[in-house]
Amino acid sequence: MNLISQYTAQRLGFAGLVPFIVLTLMALLDFNGELAISLFILYSAIIFSFLGGIHWGLCMVDADSDHRRSLQWSMVPSVTGFAVLIATQLPICRDSTLAFLAVLALLHLFWLNYERRKLSTHSWYLELRGRLTFTVVALHVILLIISL
Image 1: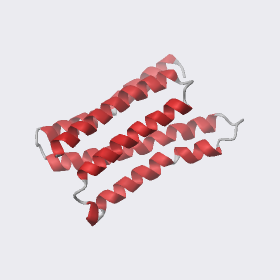
Image 2: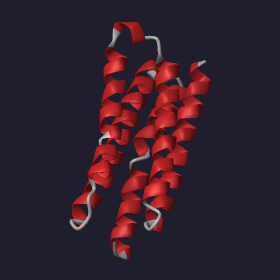
Image 3: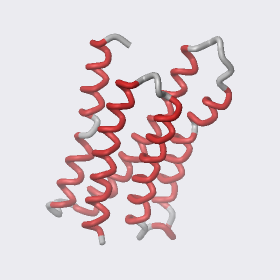
């Protein structure tokens, strides 16, 4: 990827943090706190599901290799993110905000670890993902703490 595209990806990646930050601030200031945390969980699951598409795209670009395993793994974020969203709507899980925040934080860390093993040739991307993931997980932890 050329340098201009990398800068664009970085700007878009950091812009994607804005809803996380705004929703965290809303919860911290108790401005529709419960709604802010619910929307944070929703956005976190959506962002997590987005991450698998990157691997799908890389498989499509490299037509010379067998990518069945990578394609299967690339579906994990979408299916898992969707499962979290379904779980948030189940009556039995209505009071599980702490669990959802913790699970999503761990999922983001898990996927970063997976990407570090699979995308070692894309150092600029891994650096960006590391910064974004650190910020996202830190915001999850902040919400976990204020939700106790």
